[in-house]
Length: 138
Image 1 (tube, rainbow, N blue to C red):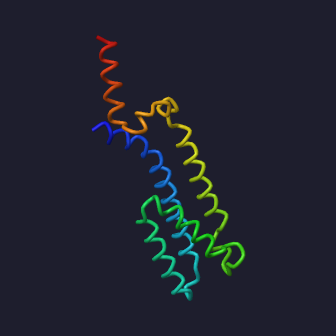
Image 2 (image 1 turned 135 degrees about the vertical axis):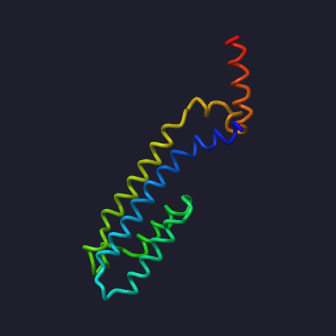
Image 3 (image 1 turned 180 degrees about the horizontal axis):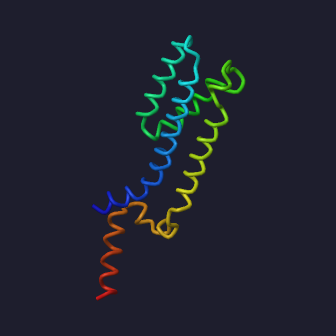
């Protein structure tokens, strides 16, 4: 039980960073799709498919997928629709995600890192911690 609780605590912040970025990315795609000219049906369909895939992609893969998208489609240099594909806004989303992940790492309790047992066996560490505190408080 403790192992699950500890894992969820560590993962919550990382997941929230990802989910916040995911919402903004999907919104970015939706805005771009709305701004595309009506004669760009195949591009619109491709953007819709990409948006749907990204909205369902696991967090571990989403970050890399967006970076690949940005590399593959150099939005600043090659876009014939600069008003549609706001490269700066998409880069801002990625930068915010990076900052959020950095904050998530800073928020981890450094005291936990000093305990090798915690790293190897969080549940065992928690059990020992609880037993130790019960003895002190009795």
